[in-house]
Amino acid sequence: MIENRSIDAREKLEPIEYDECLQYIWRWFCQVSKKRQYSEAGPGPITFTELLAWVELTRNNPEAWEVEVLDRLDSIFISESLKK
Image (cartoon, rainbow, N blue to C red):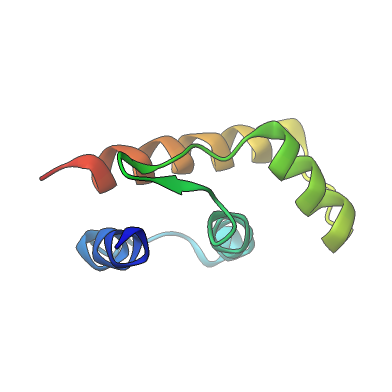
């Protein structure tokens, strides 16, 4: 049941246009987001612990502003996922 909610939430997100130079951040967000925890209430936020594990496993080294962008994308994802 929780799995279906996550699929529904992704389908509700409207595509956005962004500069090609930012594609890698969107790709990073999608990679990390796939590993997020879900509960009956919906998606949980991506924690710094999860982000740190992703950094270590992928050997990506995001700068502070890139982490901030990932955090903002996560907030938007959660907000949109919880809309009914």
